Picture 1 (cartoon, rainbow, N blue to C red):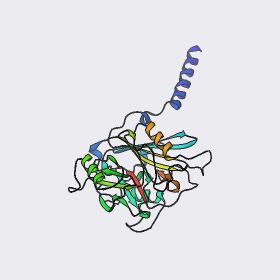
Picture 2: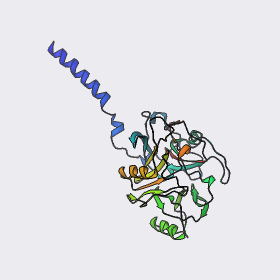
Picture 3: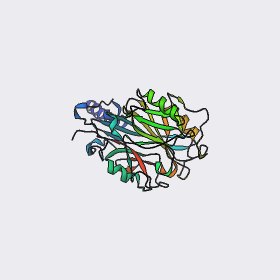
Picture 4: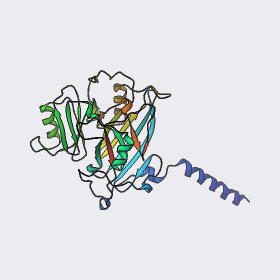
Amino acid sequence: MNQVLRIILLAVMLAVLAVLVPSPALVEGWTADPARMSPIPLDAAAGSEPLESGYLSDSVYEDATIRVQIQEDRYCDTPIYIARVQLADASQLRTVAAGRYGSQKVARAEVLADRANAVLTINGDYFTYRTLGLIVRQGRTWRYREDEAVDTLIVDTNGDLHAVLGLDQQTLDDAYQAMGGSVEEGGMILQAFTFGPALVVDGQRAHEVFVRSDHSEEKKAQRMVIAQDGPLSYVLVCCEGPDEADSQGLTIEEMAQYMLSLGVTTAYNLDGGGSTTMVFHGKTVNATNKLRSISDVICFCSALAQ
């Protein structure tokens, strides 16, 4: 009888451990498989279609070319969503606009995510409602108008993020030099966004005092940040706003402090407020009480060979 009881007790303990300990797929390291990858052409309409079997849970996707894991946190009485993304190739970080450059067309982020076959999608910089700055999408420059008051984010051909603090010819030359090229050579920039401010540069806070051109830096609001913490490794962070239950929203300073706590090397503030949208597996991750249709999104796609 004692032997039977011990067997039963062991079975119960193993069952409990299976519930308490995360699946190995969620905690073990992930490595891309180059043999199964095909870089996505710049002019392609979408990435590879994600595998339904790749969605290991409501917060994890994994295939041979991309891994996404979404976590929840709380900071300054505000819910936070953190999406950690590891890619196999820079071509998997893509942008999609609701309409042609110059149009005011908008769409729900979920619609744009579906159009791109995206695993994870976040809102961009709403560039169609501004006239200054550097705007590059899928390697094509749509706008370059100097704006010393606004920071720019550049994604180079290696998928690395570069924050340019105030845009003029000198800062752009410096950015190209940091990327190992020159303005004359061109071809170094895959994407460029104009919103800001930059929050973290080289692992340090980007500004002694964070200021937005619209003076919204002290406003408690929904916010979206794109950051990098390693080669082709990204951290996407959004917070809820004061319109959501049990949420205060974050100021720019608070968001900057949170990003510094994550140990990222570069972090950049994108459009916020009602534009703040994170989409995973076709569903919006963050609140839906105050979300608007938007002009553009940033997508993280699979590059599985077809």
